Image (cartoon, rainbow, N blue to C red):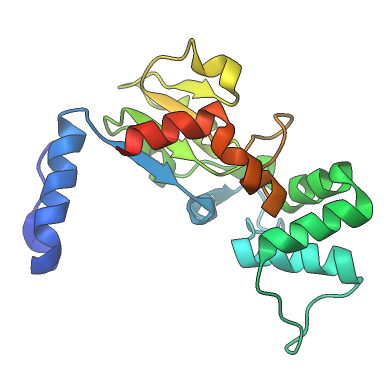
Length: 200
């Protein structure tokens, strides 16, 4: 499939959709996947929790730091700063464990949406997600073989198309990029340099 019915989109968006489609089908497009995409996963057991939203992770960090769930009057402006405070109070292993425990990765399976995304001719799929849904979905994709990159050492040998985990990956690739300090150091990481290069 390499055609897009532009009439399905608002008139002012059509030139942009066409440009994206042209680049995609000529194999000159990468895609960025954030945490909301994981919420498309299929639960293996309906009693298991959903993937948290970014604010949901912030609430878990707040609860760890303050010993209570945030109420209507309890507000915070910066989730990254709360992650710094959790790390300062309890240590990095506790922060990492909180992130791991908040993600019901193996309680979910990739959905058709994950597989359909990877069946498109992306040059790279960049993700900030820590879960393994995209790499598990890639096992059900037969048109393309995605190389997985979870750290800078793997980047050198990986061939396109690639799934590039920008912020760490479960179960063991650290650090998770979750705190303000992590983001401060992050622009010097090789994975970020590759991501930035692909954007220009």
